[in-house]
Length: 267
Image 1: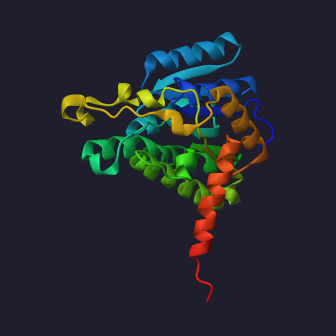
Image 2 (image 1 turned 120 degrees about the vertical axis):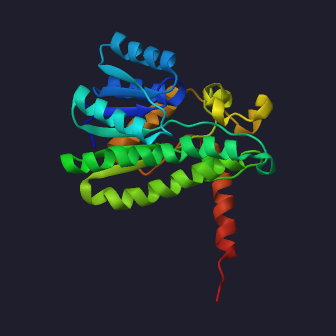
């Protein structure tokens, strides 16, 4: 979709980081924003920033792992600004540590937000978007960890590979309805994802509240969220499937696909 002006856009995880930057960038393009997050203070700040810039935005406290809350988000979006044409399933949490250390609480939390959060977004919004018949665009935030694996990121990687595969299939399924799909796969971005435990529900915390503190050096160059948001806007306008943020990812991606190619039998 080449023209974003006047569209209603929903961004989950919009209280900070990439989500906030995407929301502000969409507002500058003329979209009306519905911001969702569990961080109400940060969400209010994002709404205020957009309003200060002359844009229109509302915030809706939403836990994306809860399908009823995501359905309520969709209801609020339609009532506030009319048909939603842009959906950014951006909310996500980081999970660090070896797979052998993961507990059921860990898996429940990371899958609930990173995978089920996207699915709940699709269930709440896609049928309505199709019924409106106006087309639109969906951006699902994955990670470079949805294309490349790394030690101490196994649980997180599992969720992000799922989002990549879901997005690739969704793009084919929604083409007939003129709804484009992009999957965002950033490397190092200056966000608070390493502090995701701050929003972890009490009933999903491990006994002793012990958490793994990772070194993020392996993520390489850190870029600002605004740079990611600019790429997202461009991808929406050009209907691009993959949004890759770092040129440094090219060689690791080539090595992975060479290994896959080498594994294919020649007979």
